[in-house]
Length: 126
Image (cartoon, rainbow, N blue to C red; front, side, top):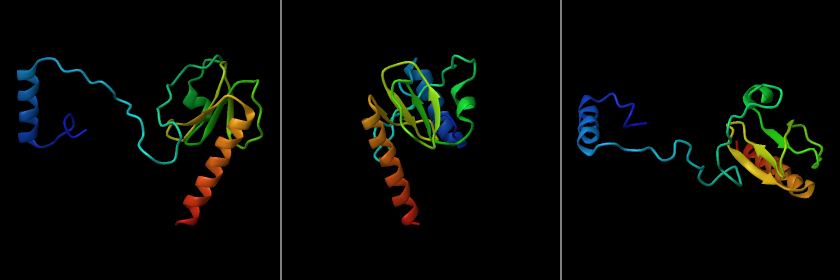
């Protein structure tokens, strides 16, 4: 952000000179993976249009964890569950980064337990 959004005229002039002198540059990754922290995966999830025509964010309905889950994997959860096709369940953080994926109910329960544990640990440290 400090290159494109700079408000310093000298920095902007240097940026413009480098772009003009250097030719075409390509941005490689606008959605970098997360560093260490509250996740097991850390990639951003795309914003698909669901079979009912809604976008994923509309279906999730706000800043919440969500579970995208194939119908062959069943777990009991308070999370917003969105049925999807495919072989694995995806747990999304509220910022739509992937917390983790699971291919079975046992793996998914392990992920959900991790969220509960990390949430409780974060709450107790405040």
